[in-house]
Amino acid sequence: MNSELKEKVGRIKLLISDVDGVLTDGAVYKNDSGDEYKKFSVTDGSGMAIARAAKLKIALISGRYSKTTEIRAKELHIEDVYNGTLNKLEPLTELKQKYNLQNDEIAYIGDDIIDLPVMYKVGVPIAVNNAIDLVKETAIYTTSKNGGDGAFREAIDWILHVQERYEEALQIAKEKIFVNQNK
Image 1 (cartoon, rainbow, N blue to C red):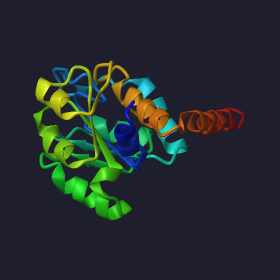
Image 2: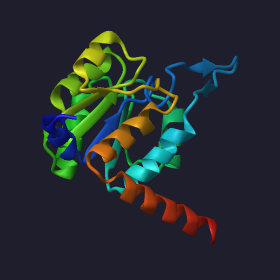
Image 3: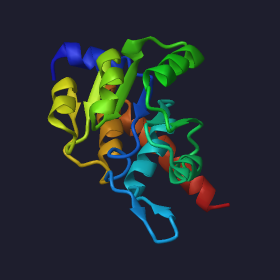
Image 4: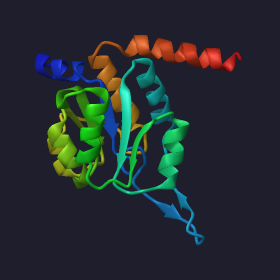
């Protein structure tokens, strides 16, 4: 890995993720009553716990509103959720102000054209393996996994490995899990 990339990734303090196509496989299932179902990866949820242990902030910006997204975000203790936001630059601006961050301290993981405006601005744009070509061309890292199949976790692991903080964060996360199981 070149030193310029290591330096860029080393500055990351916030990872923003799209939802449909990144945390899910992009499919939306509806039954005849209109109830919606989505497939989320438990591995991604574990990755969020590791990110929290590393004090890496996580935010979600979804272009499509979904109650299912709200429920999953609440389960994962993600407070910064922008659900049904087509202009993803507005939440980016809010998050930068809220956490006093610059663009180069933010990574974004996406899969489709709606993600490009944010990807062009942030320091570390990331694509999932099954993203459209233009998103992959914009990214400085593309996961080997598809959206909904652990791509988000892979991105977190990659960031923390590059920052040389993965082992420490994993240990903290494991300790919290064991403490909670022994209560």
